[in-house]
Structures are given as C-alpha cells and as structure tokens.
Image (cartoon, rainbow, N blue to C red; front, top):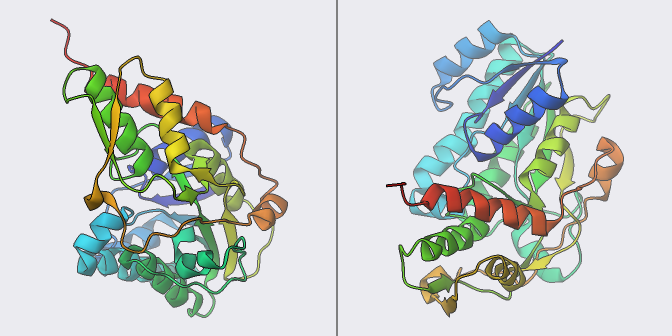
Amino acid sequence: MTRLLLTGGDGFVGSHLQRHLRENAPEIELLAPAFNITDRAAAKRLIEAAQPDVLLHLAAVSAPEKAADAPDHAWAVNVQGALNLAEAVLAHAPSCRFVFVSSAEVYGGAFTAGEPVTEDTPPEPQTPYAKTKAAAEEALAALPGLKLLRLRPANHTGPGQAPAFVVPAFAQQIARIEEGMQPPILTTGNLDARRDFLDVRDVCAAYAAALTMPTFMPGEILNIGAGTTQRIGDLLEILLGLSKARIRVETDLAKQRPSEIPEARIDATRARQRLGWTPRIPIQETLAATLDYWRAAEASPQA
C-alpha cells in the first residue's frame, strides 16, 4: 500500500480525485484531513503522525480573482503553506514524494510569443495568483533533498467547480435563466480568448499517474494539458445549444481581464510520455455535465 496524504481534498479537484482513486487505485491508502496549512505546527504534527509515502498538495487559493482581492492571504496560503508542508516532510518523512500542483498560468507573458509553452519555457507570471504559484515553485525547488515533482495544469472544469471560473459561470447563468431566476440575458467577459481546457476527470487521471511515476528528477516539471485551445465564445455557444431557453448574450466590461492573453497554447508532450496519460473526455461531454450540475443546484424546490 502507498500512503497518500492529500491536501485540499474537499475542494473541486480534490473531491473528484478522491472518487477517482477509490475507483481506480485500491493500492493507495488515502488520507485527506482538513487542516490549516498556514499553521506550521499543525503541518509538522500531521506529517509526523501520517508518515506519508506521497504528498499531493492541492490546497490553495485557486481563483485568480480571490487572489487579486486578497493578495496577502493568497501568498500566505499558496507560498508559505506549501513551504510549511515541505519543511515538515523534510524533517519527518524525508523519503516522501512531494507532488506540487502549480498552474500553467505561471507562463503568463510567455504565451504572447505565439508558440506552445514547454516545461523549458521561463515563467512570466502576470497575475497575483500566477505569481504566488511561481514563487511557491521556486521556493520548493530550492529546498535540498525534497523529492519534488511540479505539475502545471491548464484550465480544467467540470461539475462542482465554483462560478468564479468561466465555464461554471456560464452554466450557472443558463440554469438560473431556465428556472426563471434571472432575465434571459447572459453576461460575459472576453469571448475571443482561446484557452486549453481539460475535463477535471482527465486531470485527476494525470495526477493519479504522477503519484506512482517510477522515477523522476527532483524538481521535474510536467505540463498537464490537452495540447489544443478552445475559443471561450465557442464553449458558450455549445452551452447555449444545450438550453431550450432563448438567451441574449451581453458583454460586461467588468469581466474583462486587464492583462488578457489572446491564446494560451500548452505543449503537454512530456506528460503524455512520462505518465502514459492522454485526455479522453470530449469538451462537449464536460460542458453538458457542468450544465446538468448547475441545473440541479439551481432547481426550484418541488411543491
């Protein structure tokens, strides 16, 4: 049995990952306690008691808007929290593999070159969220002896994701319109941006594969992405096509990001080779499942 300590297990990705591991990885003993990663003493006690073989660090301030609104908190959680865990691992479980979930957003300005970014592309983070992730990566990589594997996932979505992200934001509005809870007007930001999107279940499959990689270089980086981009407006059109309601789309300038990148292209060749992984779920299935989730969440109570 492999003892896995999962942080952020009650979050969007964490809840899907727990389900994936229960169904597909019976050889993994899963520990997913709730605790405050910014509490250094709590992290020390947990690692000392759990003695994990692998730590998968998901817990984070993951919504870019929340990181921008409360940068001090984002730095405390995303950077210091990761360091607290890593230092506890080195002190009390030094053979433990530390799998850190970063973000492809760390590439930032590098996307504007027009070529797909690879793991060798220097990060150019532009947002407070991306800067915290890049700083955490750098801090962890500087710790001697840490068995660090860094994952940089592209955008991922699916049922259960908060409406702070674009796909659930669209799906929730459609569900509310269908229920008569808001006028038939859907507001959007920039519809022309192109992003690499994955189904959360495909991301979980990649993370699960990373837990049991036979070998890796300390500090190794893997991009987790589809390798193709989708226009945001096209995703919206698919969602609107799944609805029977007549909906008008209006642009909301407040939802426009100040440092909008036209296209974020990611080369995930290395992850496919190293993990034996490839995304399998078509985006249409992901969008339908997300819309159904929000229909259930917004459904009027039965009389």
